[in-house]
Length: 473
Ligand code: FAD
Ligand code: SF4
Image (tube, rainbow, N blue to C red; front, side, top):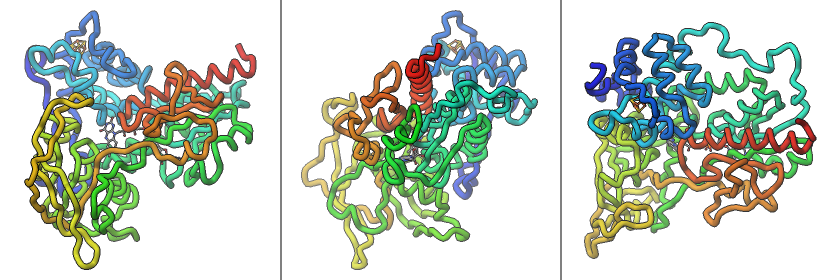
């Protein structure tokens, strides 16, 4: 295809097959496809795509390396600013970022930047030459900064990025993670069919290889507090605790059994393997499941429900198709797998059976009014339009806010009214000297790459803070 033609489509597992397994849906470009796609890039002198990337990867430079068949070089070019390219190549909403600014998109389809990023990262992983894992911790001379200790709360993309960047500089870094496994949403939220765990494990192993100590099953705010960490001799603390508290509908019947929050549903399946007989944490397989909401979490909930054997899965959303916040690709994937969409519909109350389990949802039809503060048209209920939808499982996937534990146990920590931690945008420092924060804990639910970007800002801020505090040059 190359110049002038459409982008190379992503090879995928067949929808009828993939709904029966948790294997990755997108299979990745072959070398031939990657070369062809790279040839579509014009190598624009002004590089408009770079400004669309939250960590400013030099996109034309890495694509040129693919054109030159230097795939490992391409991966390393990306890694100059993005330490998790195999993850970002898979889950970044590129269509709203770099690809949205690609000049080819004005008249046709933009270069498939994310797919090329994934290709380069996967190529490097499949062709190790022994130098990729080299780290300061393996150097003969211990770093003079090793006596300065940094605590990181949370092992999601924000925490892993801060930890990796500071360990590379030579600091002693310990991550405290509440769950028994690392990775945050990358492990308990995003399902394996979008992000295989081998890729996440590889990235976590890399951070460990830099000398980072990771302690799981430690809930900061319960086991000990942020202030205790400073008292125990940590020079700085980074809070990357994410946004794990679900937003609920607040309507009658929401406590009936069979009703889950999106996070609970995904955690039960992705982390606790509730659908597998060899695990002791079973979940009832739905006959008719309704998922409320239309963001990425909602799409992931529908598609996991199908994979564990649900007979019918329906998205119930109060706005229309154009307003759905999930990535277009994920909406399409869900549709191809058989998910139904009931749009302009809003639940009013849940109806239970005699055992207290949900058996139906009373809903209202909606119409779209004028745009609201989000810029999307406001849904307005049609009076007297009540109707019922039968269901035995409901998953409420309306998004998440930061968990209140850290803010309620950390004296002097300033937060927004909705719970986000307030930080200095230049350094990531909070209202408490030496305490930094970033990622979803600050912004509310956002993206993997924005959490990583915040991690980079905070790592630089912590380095500056410790150097100034100890009079280092
Ligand atoms: P998290 O990933 O939430 O990690 C926070 C970590 O801190 C967790 O491991 C948590 O257990 C731990 N923690 C919390 N409190 C404590 C405590 N008190 N003590 C110790 N540890 C604690 N973004 C995309 O870019 N693309 C996508 O396709 C996409 N899909 C998504 C799908 C789902 C289902 C969800 C929920 C989100 C999705 N996102 C996606 C958003 C993205 O995953 C998040 O923005 C990102 O993970 C935020 O990173 P973080 O490091 O700030 O927090
Ligand atoms: Fe290549 Fe598109 Fe970036 Fe131009 S804008 S350099 S064509 S990816």
